[in-house]
Length: 254
Image (cartoon, rainbow, N blue to C red; front, side, top):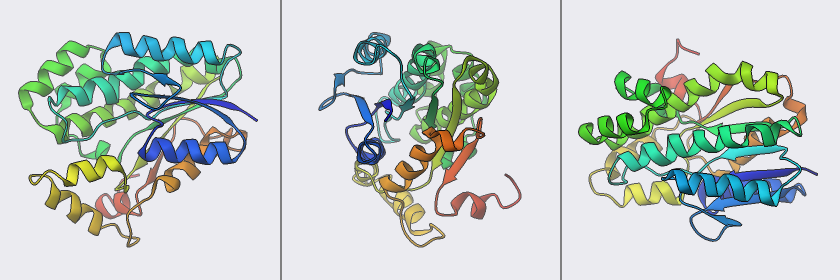
């Protein structure tokens, strides 16, 4: 059985992935703010380095896989926290654990979003991809748009994955991304508690073509497959798990 590390594994999609992998007999190292093997705040570089060091200490011989799943929603203030956690928190831990996953010729599964296709701010995405955290934070705080902070961050993370897939393959690490649509999680419950965001979120959930919201286990099944050696020919791919939403919204793009 394998050994995997995941950030944001204490609740929501992350907890679903943890449960599924544990059922298969794998050992999982969980990073989160609370109730985790490693408690770390990924909004700061200190917390990111703490997470990386903690994972390496608990798995000195390497990892079979890593899932950077920690994230916050569009309701978070200041909106720059979305950039710091969802993008830079993910990217720093990915890069910090590249060699550790390479030791076991493993895989990483990034968490994108259907919203990655909806980003409108090219300057913000460019700042993220350039690795300029302070510029990206300044741009999105000025814009003060949680939806763009989230969508642009997911777009940048997905582009980064595509751009670096070849380099990581050469090092012995497969990169892929999952793009969830509307998933019933505590994160979405918090968004729907906000009266300014509730109607839009609920309308989006009601419009899922398959007729139901997604569940954490829907994402977990796909993540487990992409981590497994049975998917060894899949690399640099974005898998939409959205009940058909992306096809509905972008029927001529793929």
